Length: 519
Image: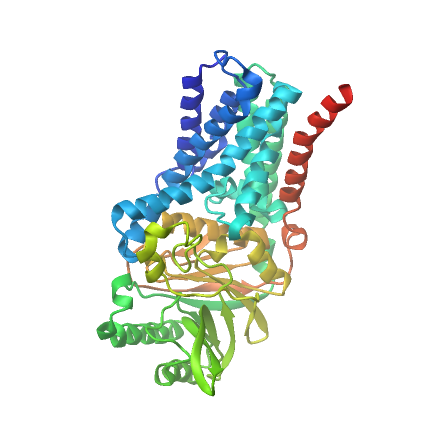
């Protein structure tokens, strides 16, 4: 049996391994064993606890919470910098707000730990193999509750391991999480002498997925389907402080216009600007908007532009500003506006402040954050006869939102972002890889324009066809395709994730019912 201090040491080890599963400091291989130390700790009760039955739940909660705190501190440390530099907070206040977010997210590994301790006590050591389902249930909860924050789900750690990542085309990123967690569960079974049979089963499953995924990538059938399109992606590399400098507005806009002409000259048939790239509101500055329209009209090339938007309303006969939206406008080849997409998932602490009353000490952040409202419709924008979707900034980490676009008919995934907020931290690398998972899930090309990088083109198998460096002006022109064929995941969605939640509930509830019948 492990001592209490050893259990906490194992919990810390899992947190470190989870954090090291993601870029830029980690490697995907750590993900496969990340949960094993935590599972070993949860399956070995502390022999020095006088009343294990009554103390078990609290102890498991604290062990899981420890793992979560290390995990999310290691992957979300950059939020402190963002709030201090751009939210007008003192560093210690920014750290406190970040700590509150990390503490909240750590409740989900704590939930995982409580459930695992409970079912291992109820069913015996073999119940360790339920860990993949319980872990996925916790990730689903993290995605759904309080608008969700599905950053660094375990499955995202494998997006660069292409044979493994192909599983997402069937069961989504949650299915990849389950596969990765199953290896940790099997390792924990072996480490606790609970049996080797599970290791053999998991090993066989892993081999089958790897072989199937390798064949799927080598065939690359989707790359020969649909209609080709040459895309131009603009990366202006505008520092965040310059974006609000009126003296720099003209130079910034002129640079983007020049890059647009360059991209068209290189053969681009669709040009994409990053999120909030115009130094003015597109609909509120006719002169600036008309210069974009003129290029589109002259070259007969549509242009996708990220810009803020105001919804005006009438009050006492006067036109006054109402809600503000983070939006994307598509200018047709004839210069007219084809449509607008309004961002649906706003960034917490970036575009809105959750629990404002509770976070009273972050008053400057509340004042500094823009009064953005969330869009209501997963609107598609027409590029000729082809509907395309736009995910703005971290919206792309929501699997079901992008699936909603594809179910609505999207033939090309575009995502525009302003990762200048993140600096040279891990966040831009994590963001790019999580976006790449959407291409595999949906069987679509994904094209990404980021203000300071990383911009790029990803094919439906997760291969990065073009990629820019961070903090350099870049103009990428490359080939993609409009695709219509849906993947299994696009058709059926997160069936495995919801089944995992149901199974978790049943595993928790059934022992209670059994005990009541015995009594």
